[in-house]
Image (cartoon, rainbow, N blue to C red; front, side, top):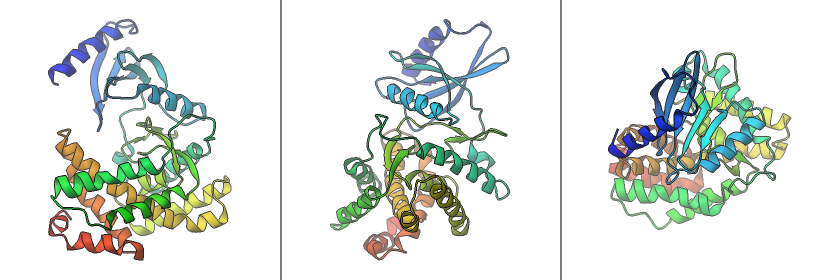
Length: 329
């Protein structure tokens, strides 16, 4: 814990004095993530809560509260907000436990867990978009994200100059996202942000960056997760389950359902190119090197999609011909 964090921790403890009923409470680190937020587990008597330390100069706590309230209103299992201090960036939340999906996924459990996650995703996507002031996942944001691949993976990490045709490839992927039905998108709907709760719907965390965007985005985050890999046959089975549920609930027409596998592939490629850039940025800018261990799996997902589509052969050939990139796999 650095000096600045230590001062915030003291401020947090002082703030908690107004809310704790048991002065013998314990406050222990629960987790941190790829942002400036930190989480602590507050335990007093038989009750357990999560305390979020989210510096307002770095994090949009209004967005967190807005999205949490919205998702809870529609029956999704998100942390309930008990107390908040927006000026200091402190919140007390319900505790969804410390068992992420990632720790529970196995050959035996995956089918049940993924179908439960997909059921929650359908609930999320059924929330009417027009009544809520979430940002649009528009062309500008999609392009800004995918440029992270160029800026941080190709140039900063590998020292490579981007080829001239790369901008056209980025535009191709952007148009794929924009032509899809637009729904509420979590943006990080994967095994580290879903909590396993026995006999309950999965807990959903890290949702504050939600936007209105492409219907395939969250499913590809879930099934082509950069922290765990499943076979193509397993992915296809769960994509099939999603399409069936989405059609039953009126989210996809028959024509859209036929297009969905292509949407899914190309949306995944956009996401994984972005993630390659984000992992490198976390390493070089934010001094969080552990994410570099996940470059290989992320790059494998990129290869798998590129080799299947004629429109992506430039990118595929470029990637496989670069010794610095091949060395990552």
